[in-house]
Image (cartoon, rainbow, N blue to C red):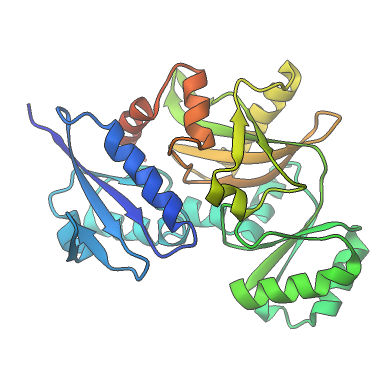
Length: 323
């Protein structure tokens, strides 16, 4: 039997490096050896590529690979860099194309696009070094739109990296300044109170063009989710969730619409805040769901009788079909 050569690209230079290593390891472990010749293609924190533990170039690492499973989170894996490289090399790959992935990663541009489709989100504003405003003026502009507390987050980071809460207007200028200085841009959103939820999307799965996995309730200690929760694995995903039938339906429909609105391909994961009245507010959409044990996506897969292994093989099929 001729095995399919699958390159699993993981690691990378982004702040989500450790999560990428775990997602890649989960994919490698999930693919049966009798069907797939799996190559572990590792990118270190400095951007050096490795194949079988030996430094390589992208061209050599990708030579004779039939299909790539993109396990990078953030950075080159989601800003379009890897996708463009693979298109030039003529290698099919899992996940969204460069345009869709980069749009989802950039929170400000994604918000603009999602708003065009009428998707309910927290009110927000975007600022960058090029805004030509002092942080005090930025804070006043935000205050004219909506009241504190405020969620301040980098424009292009995931896994709650750099997210801070400004509880008062007086705290907002420093929060904005620190975030813009470190990340180049900041999104400020109103703080929506409620229960957090996440919904996975898979295309051409279980007989549906755009299949929504059952929503998972997100549970953690503290007033808001932080990067430390992700690093420590201090997040629980309850699936089946305690949400009502109507709440689940609203979450699933919003996740499907967001996936389509951003032009995403193959799969995605959307994060929500569900208000006490059962109204979902979309927080952000991830083009590259995390797949390691303890993450949300595997838990949702298990709930419908699936697995990371089935998902990985399905992703290979999607990658090798026409995008």
